[in-house]
Amino acid sequence: MLAQQIVNAISLGSVYALFALGFTLVFGILGVINLSHGGIFMLGAYAALLLISKFFLPFWIAIPVAMIFSGLVGLLIDVLILRRLRQRQASHLMPMIATIGAAILMTSLAQGLFGSEARRFPLEMFNDENLKLGNITIPLLQAGITTLSILLMLLMVWVLKRTRLGQALRAIAESPRAAALLGIPVERLFYLTSFIAAALGGTAGILIGLSFNAISPFMGQPMLHKGIAAIILGGLGDVRGAVLGGLFLGVAEVFAITFLSSEYRDALSFGLLFLMLLWRPQGLFGASATRSA
Amino acid sequence: MLTLDRVSCHFGGVTALDQVNLTVLEGQVFGLIGPNGAGKTTVFNLITGLFPPSEGQLTFQGQSLLGLASHHIATRGIARTFQNIRLFSEMTLIDNVIVGMHTHLNYLIWDAVLKTPRFRTSEREARAQAQQLLHRVGLGDSPLELAGNLSYGNQRKLEIARALAARPKLLLLDEPVAGMNATEKNTVMALIETLHQDQLTVFMIEHDMRFVMGLCDTVAVLNFGRIIAQGSPSAIQSNPAVIEAYLGQEDT
Image (cartoon, rainbow over all chains, first blue to last red; front, top):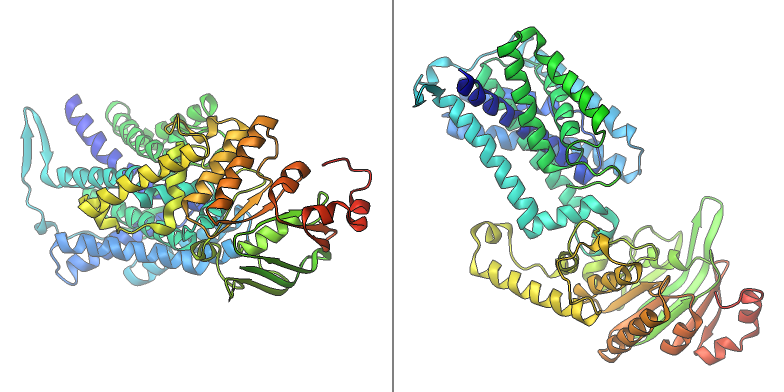
């Protein structure tokens, strides 16, 4: 029972972590809190749904295509909104307000195109096979979701820590101006960051859509709150922090459902967030005043 | 090599630079001096494309720099250091220098993913070069130290190493010895002399007169956004306009 719940917690937490990772990347590198990340999450789920149920693509093609689509949505938001605000050296509040607008637009668009009621993936596409490990059963789908999230996170951490691209991104996170003067194409890497972050956010949407098998235009907003909670728990702008914050939130929710009741799920996780802010305002890994990726 | 032709720069109603003409020749060590607030750093910010001049022309090796983004200007061969140090304080010394090599990056992300021979060679060469540059500025002993832990003087040296990593043709130094003690100043002076011997063109802003007079072959004086004198160090020291601009300000 407990072991089963731990498996569930890791599965849910890894998807939260994936969402939070994209969110924190944009904050760490662009210095922007992108509140349309939840909208991208929702559009990613719809993109996968359409590709599977309308175009009858197998999901191993549909998922990468929907990831790229989400990335392009993020890129579009960067080019249309964030780039202009950067050029004007706008204050921190402006991108927040502008991306709230983008999120509302995306939600209405999804409502208009797909209706307000929750949609489902065609269930017959998933076989109900389970992996058995002793007395723990892991549905194959859940195992796949968890594996994909963890692989993507490991890939991102590796890129950031071990490659020259990651080094350039970390340089930008510390000082975009100094990075530009060293010949790093800062603007292009801002675009790339927005693309990658949105692709990760959209993937989280696909995976949450698959695991709860419910996709609605309103699924982005609660996820955005969770993403904010996760990156504050972990420390703003910190990649390890976002991953651990997401996992922690998943664990807290699953245990709240198991030991209390599902109504208390959000109360517990956001209560923990509040306690965290009292105890360590900079989060687990956050340095109080510096930006880091 | 570098020419500023009647360059002016206004911020709102304030004129930071007024019809500035400067020419830095290849192989020169050129010094720009002047009282605080004269607009010296603005000259560097214009050259490196941080903002455009209100009027005038900037050319480097015969080509205009106007309208180019900072990273393109860096690619053309201009590197700089900052008056207020801008190192990547959460990276190691050697990583700071390697970031500076970005303009010479010659492998793709796939090379890194697949760890191709090209990636490994490039990576090994980069580390070796970075280590060499750290030695050159006198920081070769602890390449894995975090840049943020260095003393002020050593941070300035690291900034120079990072700027050199781009293999620039023109090196802009903004107050390279500010806040350094006499010993540190001497090592930086010796370093700039070796750079000069290697035919690197150096354009520096500095307040320390002994340093400027000892190193530069041409000195220009900026006061209230105007060039009031230009010439050899000895000519500058005896120029009445310069003496007037500095009157009451002893050696600052």
